[in-house]
Length: 449
Ligand SMILES: NC(=O)c1ccc[n+]([C@@H]2O[C@H](COP(=O)([O-])OP(=O)(O)OC[C@H]3O[C@@H](n4cnc5c(N)ncnc54)[C@H](O)[C@@H]3O)[C@@H](O)[C@H]2O)c1
Ligand SMILES: *[C@@H]1O[C@H](CO)[C@@H](O)[C@H](O)[C@H]1NC(C)=O
Ligand SMILES: [Fe+2]
Image (tube, rainbow, N blue to C red; front, side, top):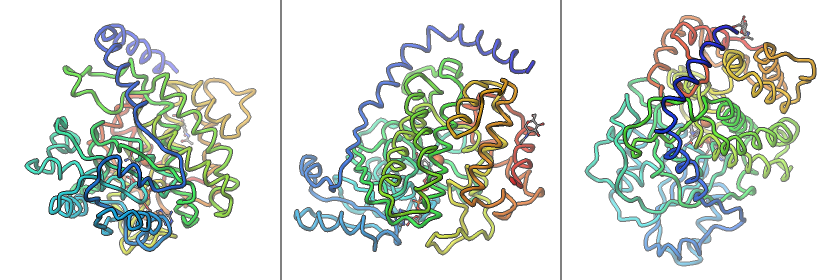
């Protein structure tokens, strides 16, 4: 507890110094997410396309979804309305720099004036990148990729409108200015983060999620869970540093703040209510599936502004170093640790570690997820939330820790090494951490039950 007191004092001091510089510009951007338009409807917004004066539309999806009802209904309405379009269905599930570049090349060849992404986070992220680079034909691929891996240049040019039609529940990518890919030679994920790549419109139709296989529903639901928990416990916006010298360098992830808190807490409540009992096992349960679909949007607006921290930062090498793990229920021909699984496996250890910095929020999260906190003390927050999460994962039949997806103690140094460059997210951890702390967190996540 001592460390937590000193860190809080230090951070409070820092906060006072930064206060005047930080407050005004940051609040402005907090409001900006209210402009993200999310349309909750059962139509594929053909009229929106017409309003956008779409001449030639680029429709992106993956090969599995290409034959499923969400994509069929989009194509039918495009054909019915006579809107000219081309389909790119070669999106890689869990995209890489190579697969991003293929999609970019496709987009550059034609002159599209609107993009439509039909799929999970893999498709929506790929489509964001294709739009970005097609509109910046002279840019080098690394120009907009997050520093220190890429150059992290600000995006100044205008992009074409992008309509995101999410089919998982989910990444919330329809609301965020983030596109994630696996940078193959680093064996870790990184991405592009800028408000400029936020979709123009999200079409959130719960019927699109009814066909998700059981494990896709579970894993994408864990992503929602972690988005909510991480953004709610992220370093507060007024303790974040350094203050960017120019607002154009203001990060997309700004730390937890009173606005994102509303979205994150609400998302967590919906996950607690619907995920465990209905949403995963019973695809016929439309109330549960649509509630989770909305929760992914709520959490997306929360974390898209506040940020995520250690579960996500540590997940990028867990996904990137995959050896042979074949994900149950995923119709893909390459080894993969699905994103939601790679984030949730470290969550008990991570929140046990971060709890001393804001025990009230960790206790509140445990309570929302069903724990009895009536007699819990502040110092119980970490173990209590960790136990609650472990039970939640056990009930949903999650693999027993990193060992079950192919890792052992020998892999810990590589996993730590792949986490270091993820400072865009890890620096939003409420608790500062060393490489040794990261090693402990990975080791503690080898087995869960
Ligand atoms: N941009 C962001 O803000 C953000 C946030 C979190 C994660 N991500 C990224 O998103 C990706 C993961 O996305 P995801 O979890 O949505 O899954 P996904 O897009 O990788 O899809 C997973 C699998 O489910 C299938 N599928 C998707 N919807 C389906 C449906 N309705 N019916 C049947 N099958 C369906 C897909 O074909 C695929 O095989 C990762 O690359 C992750 O890093 C991005
Ligand atoms: C939680 O953290 C404490 C103190 O850091 C540690 O002793 C304990 O083993 C951790 N428990 C879990 C479940 O990670
Ligand atoms: Fe995520």
